[in-house]
Image 1 (spheres, rainbow, N blue to C red):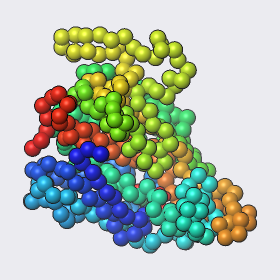
Image 2 (image 1 turned 60 degrees about the horizontal axis):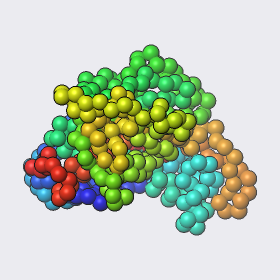
Image 3 (image 1 turned 120 degrees about the horizontal axis):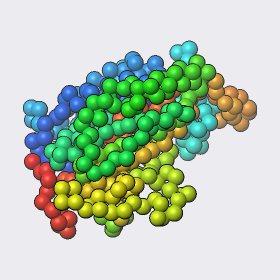
Length: 375
Ligand code: EPS
């Protein structure tokens, strides 16, 4: 769409994941520590199942660098899988029988698409394992944002019934200290007491053989105004951000700003008065627009929110029907994570960094400002 593009390949239990990223400027340092840090957050935050603990996400750059810096060519990075068994396993460690699709998983739709009587191949492609590669992508793109002075954070706002403290992300907010605070929390919560409640809930849900949904928000600030555009559709920042984050397995709803709940409100209540000060420039009292109006950044923090469904692999599975002959049965009790909210938030931060790095690098004729970062 813009200047950057990427491809990711790999199966959940295949030998490796591969990321090919094109369009990077030459001379960008590969941020090894940040990549490892983001990967370990994605792997180790609360809510993960036994598989995540077994992986170490060792990654190797094979092309596109000269020493520690990009050389202007396509960057290729592979991430090794430790579990290379080629198939999902059940909670006892035996091959999961995917003749009976897990309701809510990709199993049924993929089996119908490819005419399969066992959904193993579908589960391999649909697995969230691929998000390790998105995380590497985002950690690199965050360097481009950093070059433009933009910080970003991932905050889990809900795990099941437990809601974390909320903030109004207003212009001038400094994100770097908050990032440290959030990353010290096992669930990317701001409030330690609520984090403990959410941890307790995760343990209970796991013991019950169930999974639980959640929600998160990604915040980027400061953001220069005018990124994106009202036309064409593919240039709209809201459309690009939402479409990209919606592609994370488990994410089922994406909103910009305070849009969740806006269906109940009057315009005079939802929108917020506009002000101007010499120091801050233009700003709204409340950032209900989430920093994007008319498909363009308005200079306020970008706030993207998303809902993650409860994962479909259950310890006490639902009734299902055979892919062979339709007979009634039960879906398998496949090994799984308990809640995807925290790892998905890290992945969303990564993909948001990709979209914003792309619009920052791609600014050219018609955009009306000096390129911020084009080493
Ligand atoms: C996943 C199921 C689990 C997760 C996996 C995504 O794997 P397994 O089937 O081996 O138990 O742990 O996520 C990862 C391996 C990862 O690195 O994120 C799924 O069905 O999507």
